[in-house]
Length: 484
Image (cartoon, rainbow, N blue to C red; front, side, top):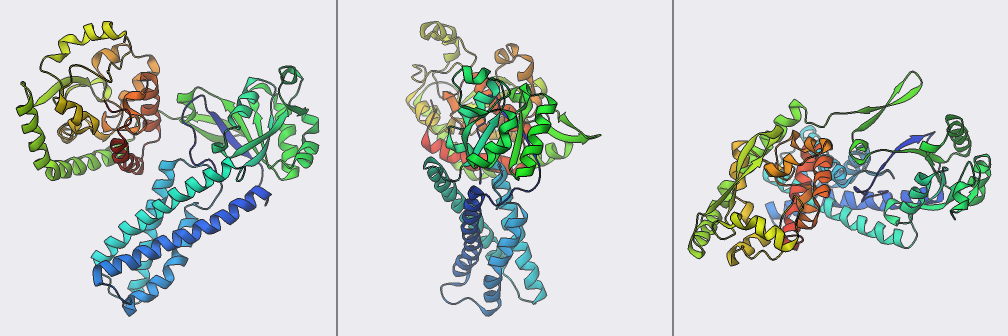
């Protein structure tokens, strides 16, 4: 649970763990007790899902005999499976990765229980199993959300923070110390260990030199050491690693890298050295096929379910203002392929003719031109935009294969013409109806922030990540943050 909400902005550090298994330090004991409590809530999530699904399927009352022993076994199965997915370890995982692991853990827990039922020849209702899965997933995700909030509150009060020494001689070390002042990262800086006095001259809290590191660990009770490796020699790093290993304290070696490179790196041992491997920014053939299958099924189902509502919106657009129902706009799709994106019209007909004039009047010269109080927007259009209902026709684009349900924001041709080299990577996947940009602020984000979120999404894509973003989209729409 350490570092639940890892920052995705700024210049990140690539951290490599060095040394042996971490000992039972005071903070790790806190985490151990925390995860014991979380394990109880996970078991209750599975058991509660089974019981409530049983009540829904068969009515209130005592469970049937052939179900009773499944309820009794469910906590043990949950603890084993959730533990196997490393959901009870104090290591940093992203919210999307935690979401994926919980979905898989609940699924495998129920598969395990079903396997036990086959051994006992107990007949299980498929409706009951489906309800159990849905409820167990909801309960497990909700309980984790509560624990996230609880740990964050505790960190604000000084708990669940690893006392940390920072080894370095340059601005990178000071950047680490500044970052650790925010409790969300799960560390608390004790001070700096430097190879010279340059940081001390700048007013930094230098406690000593590298030769003093072992004594400083013992004196301060440090449980973690961060090494800002970009300014240290290989001999200094080797000295730090030896001192830390002998004290049984965890060490993390960081290297400042451009933000868009950091998440694409993997560490690989080669001939006694560590090599950083940079993966390409694109989906594999299998990933692309899985994503397309998800898009086809989701868009087909969405259009079928929403068809009556789409007809009502279309009629309202037609009756409240003159002009076509749909607004068609040229956008750039995957690998630069042009396509026509569909929306319900929210502006007066011919409103695009006034764009240049409005840019001059409002002093807007950025690529993402959007006004909070745009005079061209109709009254109905303002309502549609508030809840992003104007974007529902894009499900047709998804069905055609021009867009994806989740993906980067679809850019305009004039935006692409202004791209820098690193920004073209966002065209490696189909643009999305929703995406990280949608759930992270929408129109409040700058162009560069949108591009960085898009690239982070591509580099970390998984089907569970798409499901996570879809699940986050509805609350983002209801909050109406950045919607105009």
